Amino acid sequence: MNRTMGMLGSAITLISVILFAVFMLIDYSSAAYAVCIVLACGYIIMASSFGAFAAIGFEAAKLAGIAFAIIYGVFVMLVYYAQITTLQQNDLTEQAIQILDYQKFGLFFAYDLFGYAMLSVSTFFIGLTIVPKNKVDKILRTLLLFHGVFTVVGIIPVLGLFNSDMVGGEIIGVLVLEIWCLYFIPICILSYQHFKQQEIRSV
Image (tube, rainbow, N blue to C red):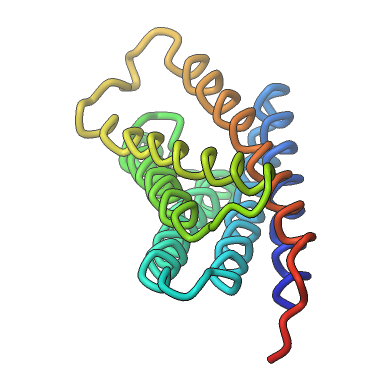
């Protein structure tokens, strides 16, 4: 079951990332928001599956990776669920829109980036649990560890680099997300292969 769940989580995450990239390019924001919720669910399954196959001696990194995955899931689900419900289904004041619409670079924009920072921390700890047995594992471990660098996105709201008056801010935001998608797609593919080649463990 652990092997199957790992492959399933990786597949869900992969498909979600690809769809998110496409929806962002064609400016279909509602679908992009919805698929991000599915993406978070897929990654939590994937992270938990990595934990199930973690070697003895890596318990702390395993638990940290799963914990940060859950924190990531809570924050991004909160942000994107609000986008497709409260924001789009209600006649809100300009002040409320400034807070809830993450494209306005307000509070929910900060929550969104914090969530992705937690995702990066999660992948770093997950990477630590992988003991490479082949080329796939080595590349996957390197990508997961290096993905931890994306934690710096959590600093962006603190520095105030993006604001509602910024010219071209939305385009830059989309470009950054597309780059992230291109980076994370190989992680999903290699994770699927990693779980596929795991031996089924008896309980």
